[in-house]
Structures are given as structure tokens and as C-alpha cells.
Image 1 (cartoon, rainbow, N blue to C red):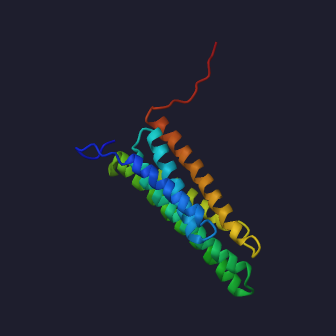
Image 2: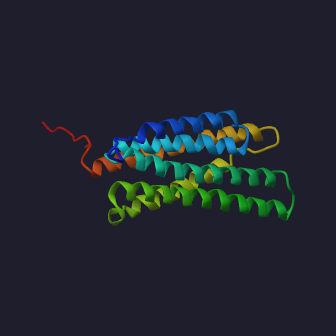
Image 3: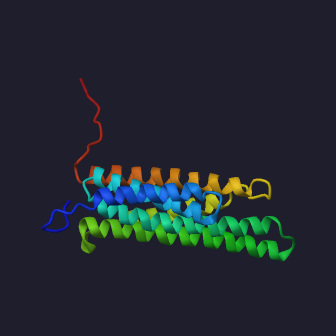
Length: 200
């Protein structure tokens, strides 16, 4: 899709941007920033591809995926960091860090998932045709994804590697939710059809 009379196509630059984020994150993967960058790059790319495959615009899925990935990455990093602190703290302080980890990992990720899907739908179909059920579903799923990734073992010996596991977990989960959303979007827009049994 061209955005102006000069024929400028943002899609190739968005794809390049996603790979730049992934590569930069891979270099910094053992740092909190690295995990966030990898998640941003992967989810933006997946979002664009799945949006396009279901009849929408690549740009809308890319922007929505970038938003979701940013919040998911931040939620996972904050949650896992607090979980690490809780695992190495005693008494009521440990409980406080645990609660903070659960609230932040789920809450931050959920906000990003819902807002990202809202933006994608708004860019594809307009504000008046939003599927709120899908937005709520995406919100809950992404929040749960962030929560689960923060609970990956965060002991002192595995903490750096735990960040890598958490990033991979988030990307795999986002890939699944994007694929499911894309499939049902394609069914709804009649660009795909469910197989029907053949009766003889």
C-alpha cells in the first residue's frame, strides 16, 4: 500500500526496522533492554504479516505488534526482575515483591496487548467497526503471557539465561495469538473458509 503520490511504500522499511530491532536485541540479549528489543522486533514483524494475510494492511499489524511487543517485553522484564528479587528475599518483603511482580507483568503486558490490537483494528477497519471481543481476548492472553514469562526460574545461577527463555516464550506465545486472530479474521472476512465434511 502506497502512502503518498510519490509511491512511497513503508512496508520494506518496517520489515528492515523489525530485523534491526531483533539483531540489536540479540547483541544485548542478556540485558533487560535486549529482551525488550527482540520482542518488539519479532511481534511487529509477525503482526504485520498476519494482518496482511487476513486481508488487512501490513502497516497496521506492524504498528499494533510493535505496541504489543514493547509492553509485553517491558512487563516481562519488570515482572521477572521483581520475581528474582522476591526469590532472593525473605519474610514479608518477599511477598511484597511477588505481588508486585504478578501485578506488573500481567498489567503492563495486558495493556499493551489490548492497545496494540485496538490500533491494528482501527487502522484496518476504522473505529466504528472494532471487534471488542477480540480486543478483550488479546488483552487477557497477552497479560497471561507476560505473567507466565516472568515466572520462568529466576534463581541466581539461571537468571541471565532466564531472560532468554522469557523472550522466547513471549515471542512463541505472541506468534500463536496472532495466528489465531488472523485465522478467525480471515474466516470473518470470507478470505478463508473452514473445511466442510463431504457426505456421500
